[in-house]
Structures are given as C-alpha cells and as structure tokens.
Length: 329
Length: 262
Ligand SMILES: Cc1cc2nc3c(=O)[nH]c(=O)nc-3n(C[C@H](O)[C@H](O)[C@H](O)COP(=O)(O)OP(=O)(O)OC[C@H]3O[C@@H](n4cnc5c(N)ncnc54)[C@H](O)[C@@H]3O)c2cc1C
Ligand SMILES: Cc1cc2nc3c(=O)[nH]c(=O)nc-3n(C[C@H](O)[C@H](O)[C@H](O)COP(=O)(O)OP(=O)(O)OC[C@H]3O[C@@H](n4cnc5c(N)ncnc54)[C@H](O)[C@@H]3O)c2cc1C
Image (cartoon, rainbow over all chains, first blue to last red; front, side, top):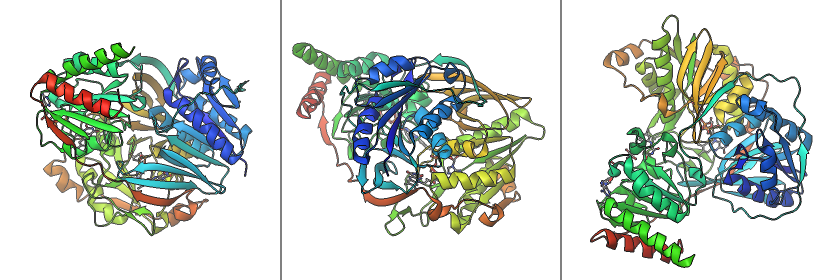
C-alpha cells in the first residue's frame, strides 16, 4: 500500500522547533521507502514563516493555515486541521516530535484516525509493507521494535536529537488548508505566560549542562552553568532536587518525572545520579559528572567522573572552552 | 461533582524489569507494583479539589489492571479517595494505547464523571498518549499538564504548563485533565485513612459488562511488538581526582577533545 508521510510542525509564532527539521528529513527517507509523498502541516500564527524555513528541507508539500482559532483555543483546532490533511492525503504515517505538545497531538490524532501509536522512537525501518519503529523503553534499559498492523494510518512520536536534520531544497509546494467546517472548540487560551527562555528546548539541545542539590541555590545555575552551556552551544537542565527547591522551573527537570534527554554531551555538577534521574539522561552520548564525592551512583554509568568542587572547576572549564573556541574562530 | 482519577499500576522504579520473550510483554508478576508516580499527583489534585469544593464532591479511583492489583488500589483509597473501580479482564492483555483507551472510555462512560484526572505519563509504557486518546473516545475536552486548578459552577480555569511557561486555559465540565507535579506533593495516607480504606468498595468490572463494538487485547491492538533487546548497560566512569579547579577543568577539557566534543 502506498502511504504518505505527514509531519506535524511544532513552532512558536513562526519560530520552528529543531525537532521539526529532524522530522522533515526522516519523512523524506521514509516516504521514499514506502512510495509516497512527504507532507508537513504548520498551523497558527507564523505558519507562513515556518513554511519558508521548511522550504529548505526535502518535502513535497507544506500545508498551512494561519487561522487565529489555532492559537485561541487549546488543541481542538490543531487536531481538526491535522485530521483534514491526513484524510485528504489518504493512508499515511504521521510523525510528531515527542515533546509535551507533541504527545498531546499524537494521542488525539491517533484516536481520531483509529491509528496505532508508537512513541519516543529513535529509528524507523521498513520491512516489506510494514513500518517498524525502534524505541528505548523502560528508562532506556530495553530497546523495543514495534510494528504497525495493517491499517490506513499510523502515528509516531520521534525523540528529539535521535534523527539527523539535513537540508535539501526541493521546492516544496505551499498549500492553504480550508477551515474544517462545523467544529466547536471547548477550551479557551486566555493568556500565554513565559517563565523560562525557550531559545533551545531541553530535549533538543546537543549539549546539556545540568545542576543539582550540590549547587546549593539558584545563582550558580545562572553564573556557573549558563556560561558553560553557552560556550558549548547547549542549554541548562536540573535534577528534581533543584526543581523542588524552586531554584529552577520544573520545565528544566530531567528524569523519570521530568524530561528525557539524549544530547551528545551531558555534563552535570552536584547531581548524585539517583535512578529517577538516570532514566532521563542515560541515553546521552557522553556523560561527564563533577562531584565532590567519588563514590556517588553517577560513577556507575558516567563516562568521566571528576572528583572535586564544582564551584572551582566550572568557571575554569568555561574559560578553557571559550579560549579554545576563540582560537578556532 | 464526581471526579474520577485514572491510576496505572506499574512496576516499582527500582525493580528489575523484564519483558517476556514469548509474549513480548512486560512481566508484571513477581515484581513490586506501585501507583504510577505521576498518578499520585493526579490523586493529590483530586483530593485537594474535594477539600476545596466540599459538598457532594467524590473521588473515584479507576484502573485497568489485573485484580491482583487490588492491594495497590487500596493505597489510593487510604490517601482519601472514596471508592475504586477496576477494569480487570484477561481479554485486555496485550492492549496497546488505542485498545486501552477504547476499553477505558467505555468503562468510564458507565462509571459516570464530571471530571477525569489522569497522570501525564506512565512510567512503563510512557507514551503519554492514553489520556488524549481517552478524551477523543469520550468526546470531552482535554486540558493537559494542568496546575492551579480552580472550579466553580462547572466552570474550570487552570494553568497549562508548557515548555517555556504556562497558558491560562478556561472551559467547562465535563472534561479530562492531566496534571503536573506542580499540583503539590502527594499526601501520605494517615493511619485513619489506612484503616478506613478497608471499608471502602473496590468494584471489579469485566469486559462483558461494556458491550464493546471493537476488539481489544492483543487482537484489537493496532501495534505489535516484534522485537525486544536489552540495551547494553553503560560502563563505570573513569574517575579522576581534581587537585584544584584548574586541574579539574583541564581533565574535562582534554576528555571533551578526546571525544571530539570540542
Ligand atoms: C517518584 C519519584 C520521582 C522522581 N523523579 C525524579 C526526576 O525526574 N529527576 C530527578 O533528578 N530526580 C527525581 N527523583 C528524585 C531522586 O530520587 C533524587 O532525590 C534526586 O535526583 C536527587 O537530586 P540531586 O542529585 O541533585 O541531589 P543529591 O542526591 O542530594 O546529590 C547532590 C550531590 O551534590 C554533590 N555536591 C555537593 N556539593 C558539591 C560541590 N560543591 N561540588 C560538586 N558536587 C557537590 C554531593 O556529593 C551529592 O552527590 C524522583 C524521586 C521519586 C521518589
Ligand atoms: C515497555 C512498554 C512499551 C509500550 N509501548 C507502547 C507503544 O509504543 N504503543 C502502544 O500503543 N502501547 C504501548 N504499550 C502499551 C501501553 O503501555 C498500554 O496500552 C497502556 O495502557 C497505555 O499507555 P501508557 O502506558 O503509555 O500510558 P500513558 O499515556 O503514558 O499514561 C498517562 C496516564 O494515563 C493513565 N493510564 C494509562 N494506563 C492506564 C491504565 N491501565 N489504567 C488506568 N489509568 C491508566 C494514567 O493516569 C497515566 O498517568 C507499551 C507498554 C510497555 C510496558
């Protein structure tokens, strides 16, 4: 059966999330294998800006709507528009980023399209007519391969940072989506409040510099971690102890009850490496820990554990990295 | 107002988890089972609402799990919920999100509700898809990742956490919500709660009572696990003592270069 691949674009007022480019690249590869087209759906304020950015990726069509209802009402219009594109495209695999927003969209559209859902996927392969999804499960200790049974649609949430994004301009056509008729929207978004800068999503950052209880307060996150993160092109994360203490917002928490990250480099200071933290970061490429105690659990699964005082090491490290970057610039 | 909290019974975080190579399903017997951590927050949110709203507000725990999980459900009752319903049936084994949500939706229609509160993610399956699929099947709106929940006259106002902050969202009952940890630390069961839980009812519902139109269980699932493999565990770290700040920084700097991360 010929099937198309549809990606759901996550963006904020036209600023596209990085995972979207990974989805676009994978959509092309998958579409070529199953003999269909690669389509994108971008909705709400800024969708046409998004279409421009996505134009650099090998998609066939970019379906957009800048209907203000998308940003005025929670999720319902988004799911309706996505459904409309999926129905008109016919049998398809829908790819969505495995993010807070993406999980909501994926669960809804899967039920709407009577589709199976595979989640947190890090690899996709095609076996005969079947699409199989590879995903780390159970805190990253198990790798499962899950196939869609015969059905018109399948929905996949993709782990950020797992697929490469490769731009290739193929001249995608931009298509306006007609507003689905006869819909009512139940939840109104009255206000949007920013608490943390959203320059780089935690799950999408290639480098995460995380801090824990050992940092003793909120200031070191700004004065010690942030400069190092900036020097390495990454972002700041935290353990639950730091989030519970109110030093950082919960949106920065990594672990079982926080975010799951797989950056190339995970560097943490003042984090002991409890199992609930481990399951949120153990699939990182390289793990470096700074801890004043050499017998902490993180030593069991990090690549390098430097035993010393984070307050003394971090500023020096930031300086070394900055100097090295400047020398190569 | 009738609040129903969906609670998943999951293997304890510290338990060694195993997938049966024959059925390709998580082995749930012989491992300590607990309330899914996020669902404790859902219970907390429901009990806090009950306290705030008073009157005829009730909290019902709903789980789709084997009957052997009754003891775990009792812990939720000990926290202060009024009663519980378990959807337990061998025919549900092998259900995926799609089939689980479909079966649960039919059960919830039967139980009745004004507000359903779910956790945001289950520790084992971890798709986060179930509550959203449930809202589709029930035809009720889904206010996800909610905190600071206010309800009066069937009108709901809550903050919905996003990656960079929150949205203020309003709507009306009936609805479904998922909650975040910001609703407050789950309370411990008091001795009185533990004693009282023994007298509370846990009804068991079977599939035959639901009059399902679609297949559930392994046959009804839209996905199928074809392969499972253990992920090789990470090895122990190279441990280096840092004499002082500059020495520690140099060790890490050289290591990053060696790994081509700089
Ligand atoms: C249901 C449940 C869910 C949970 N979910 C999560 C989760 O999602 N994420 C999470 O992170 N945790 C989670 N936890 C909590 C987890 O069990 C740990 O309590 C938590 O990860 C500890 O955080 P920490 O490592 O920052 O603090 P600690 O364990 O207190 O470690 C602090 C470390 O800092 C070191 N230190 C102190 N001073 C310095 C210094 N100057 N320089 C260098 N090192 C120093 C200490 O040696 C120590 O190792 C959860 C727990 C439960 C029960
Ligand atoms: C290792 C593993 C991998 C899996 N992978 C997939 C997959 O890729 N695709 C798929 O379709 N299914 C998968 N499943 C099956 C899936 O876990 C179940 O169908 C489950 O009922 C719903 O999904 P979830 O665990 O992801 O829940 P989530 O959507 O993560 O759970 C969110 C909330 O929904 C509620 N909830 C979930 N399940 C129940 C329940 N049984 N009873 C009461 N409340 C509940 C809880 O409030 C929970 O906090 C997997 C299961 C396991 C053990």
